[in-house]
Amino acid sequence: MLRWLRERFDARGAAGALVLLTAGCASAGAPPLDLAEAAKGMGAYHLGAGDRLRVIVYDEPGLSGEFTVSSAGELAFPLVGSIAADGLTADQLAGALASRIADGYMNDPKVSAEVVAYRPFYILGEVQRPGQYPYVAGMTVEQAVAAAGGFSYRAQSRRVNLRRGAGEAERSVDIGAGQAVAVMPGDTIRVLERYF
Image 1 (cartoon, one colour):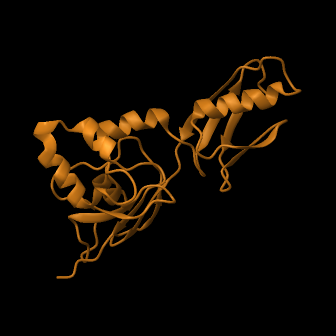
Image 2 (cartoon, one colour):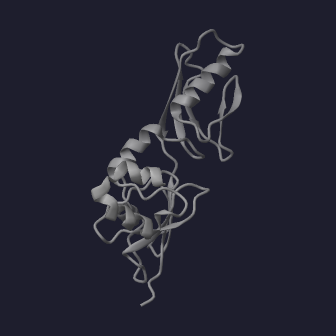
Image 3 (cartoon, helix red, strand yellow):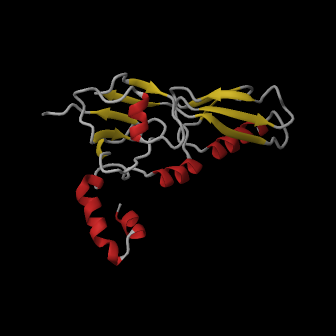
């Protein structure tokens, strides 16, 4: 966390670093992403359960197609069976598939993989229609709330709780200050009830 702060703030930005630390960024997980950082992060996107991929094995149309990462984090692929996909990038998965196919099935297979549908995000709590929604690139927390029908009349509309990834802790995120917080695939957004 401290390395992240040093890279982003020089001596003149020390006050900004202090604000980030006192705002709860020292808890588990990275600080919320803005839209530009989210777009960069999608280039190194790590696969997870529910992601749908298009895999192409060149000159082998019978092996090419769309496949979904299972809830166990595996991809069932013809000839080679299940292969661990959870946590890999699409390029790493393509390399792993090429290695498995080359092990007794083909000489020098050329494999490519790309994500065609990202895993959904979830929104619960004080919204009109809580549930699971398809991820759309560039989506913000405010747009996610709108997709769920908007805030209920009891909702706290300036802060939400956000959990990014299955093993991460839930964090409180300010959305009322004009800050666009990006939604990522697999995020869980919880809209809290206001107390007054």
